[in-house]
Length: 150
Image 1: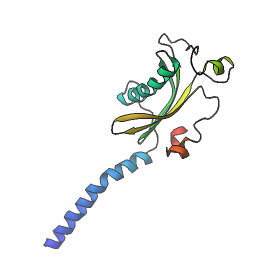
Image 2: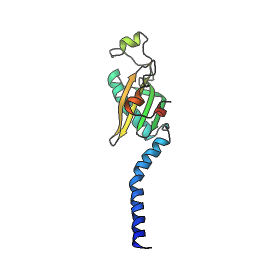
Image 3: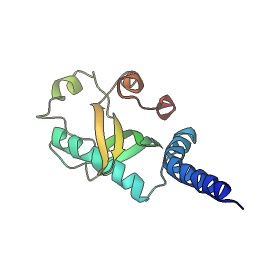
Image 4: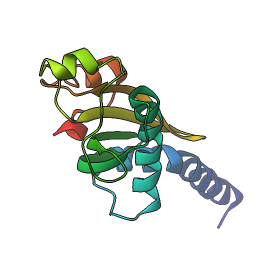
């Protein structure tokens, strides 16, 4: 093998190695959304990050009954129903949702959009008690994949 041939092969290997991270990121997006298994570290990480603003807003500790949790690439979408630690309904008393809850204008669930970066998961947007499809504009607003919300 001549020096030009060897140089061309090395260059090809370098180009392929440099493009691998971009390919892998694209492949994870192309793979479509999935639901992390119960008990997995990924599922726990997503739910723990969502739990923080919910507990702050509800002024009480919560656990989640998960109706939907989907991850695709660096994005996650979750629809849990928060409950008290004893699996009872939450008290909305003294929260910013108290009046709406009493009036029946919100339900007992929530929806949250998260994005993963180098530090971990971040809550990008969340809504308490949506009675409509509050997350419909999120793909366009934040660039999240639409398949995540199906």
